[in-house]
Length: 298
Length: 231
Image 1 (tube, rainbow over the protein chains, first blue to last red):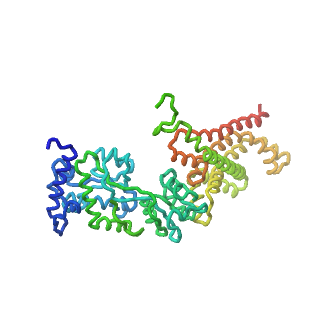
Image 2 (tube, rainbow over the protein chains, first blue to last red):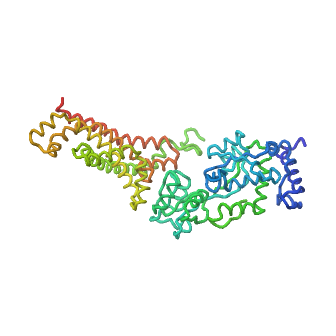
Image 3 (cartoon, rainbow over the protein chains, first blue to last red):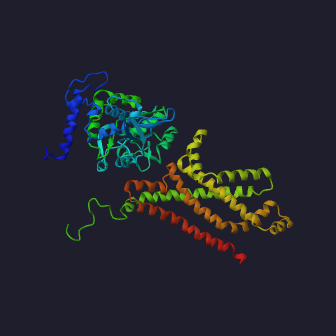
């Protein structure tokens, strides 16, 4: 035992834990037949987290603290009417909290802390949040600073056009008399040059101006991450999202490197919701009107 | 690596000046747009300023009111707001202007309100004695303005006007917010591609300097010539 490398030393308690969870009664109202680790019906009972794991710390505290966006429609957005933050990212966090607290889905088990893109990684490193679910793309650069869960949402660049437009993909607009709008200096702008080099580009400081330009007929389309486009389409029902993703932006949940065992636990929860239909239901709820529900990302 | 090997080290940033050299055509085309935008706006500003400046001091009250409304409104609202309004706001009343047009109109009307005030101050600086002498000689109001007041007022207005021209050229950079491909807009695009911020914006600043410094010199020379009779 003394000669096992550190990684294996963590893996052992976690796998014992998962095995124990499979045997325990997991889903509310259901019975857990031991179906093997592969199906990952990981629903660890709160009391059986190893004392040194990060999950035990959360359970002891009594609630999960999550860093989220509050200004991204459909993903992390403060609803002014209910004064609650809601969205796809929020629902994923709620699933994790439910798993941590043995099926307890009450609101008091999660605290949502609004963070900006600039703050989300420092917040993890300082320990002011346990996990970050803030439309964060997994990049090698960021992996040096924090850990990421498995991909929980696969964003990518798409196209937003008016309801009566005949364009179905970005290549349809690759003509000199077509205009596409994006934010100045964004990677979206550079991708437009790559995928529709002959189209005219209209660039503004933000996407609100792009939406106004689309409404006024100054541009034929807006192209950026589908997450942002969905938010715009939500504001203007006279628009539609078209085309498959032509870039890949894998979103991951951020976890501090020092959170022992937490990343594996979160991945277990993600695997679970991807197979038991919860992921698809969440997608349907927030993004269902923009296109068919895809398969969950691996 | 052998000693004295070539400069390109993989992974290191390119030598200073590369980004600028590679993107010079785009930046220069932006400069041309800035110059044409500024020139058109200046002509508009001078025309409007002259008209409304004189309106502000006519004996007729309704005309004076018109002049005051123009000056007070366009001088006291931000140019950015006026530019956005010209581009995004006017379509609500059926007027859809292209970016360049909206930009030079907003810039010209905005600067015109300042020119009007300068013109007014210049005219008012003419001593009463001049006006009374002109009336005594039997000149009509229009003739008095044209032959006595305006030529003398020009000398007083030239330095402040020079300042306004410099301000106009710098303010033209706001056109970049409504997607006009001027120097600032193209500078931002090149910067986002290359991240060579010092080079690119250094060059942009230099271009604006090249446009405005001679203006200051010209104003000084003009002032010198026009006030010869006073020395």
